[in-house]
Image (tube, rainbow, N blue to C red; front, side, top):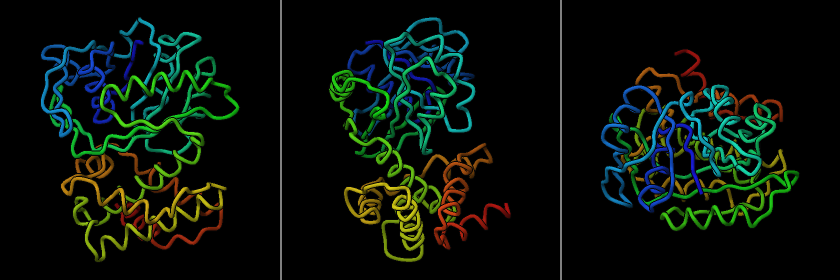
Length: 303
């Protein structure tokens, strides 16, 4: 299968690197000096799971790509979704499956509305990955888990999803094909929202969340409030959502931070709208009491 990675940041670059290491046919969409470095030296992957490699992968801008792909991973930030419409339409065939791997809930249907002729699934990922230099991706820690699936109304055969999952597993990625992707993408959104908002509010890495105290209390409060939103949406949690979030956070590299936190610290555009304010807006519509989220929002509204 031919894979296209739209957005070669920490997530997309890690997926591309693991695919390339396993000999898969993968092309990366990137831009600027990051793209120039990948073209000149290959994709530089520094991975706790796979080691350090320079990987020859195809790389181009979205405008330059003129091929077709069997699987397209969309790994841009939520605020960039509108910019990918044309490359999706151009790269997709009637059999192509698009798998968005974003942090914000509801991304699959949103992209599907932009490109209604394309089969857009939904997905999420658990990974600490970031751009550590021009053409360089760092994958930190031992967690690299992808979840994706089709919504029931899409009628995508399970065998097609399993084929993709098997190939990704060959590359060393843990993959689950979801039987309820709405549930699983909400669970990821709730986790990354709590993680990113806690780290950004207290300006600390995840190691500070892994010990009892004020920082962990913030994380627990955010997790409790987002879990209540999920319950009111009808999400059926397979285990206690607060315990689940704590289990995941405690496995992260203690030096890791969420990309939203990194972007805010650098003064870059960030996903704070999708991870903080969209959660609050949804909670208010569902009449959920959200004191911890409002505490965090107060800091960033002032900023």
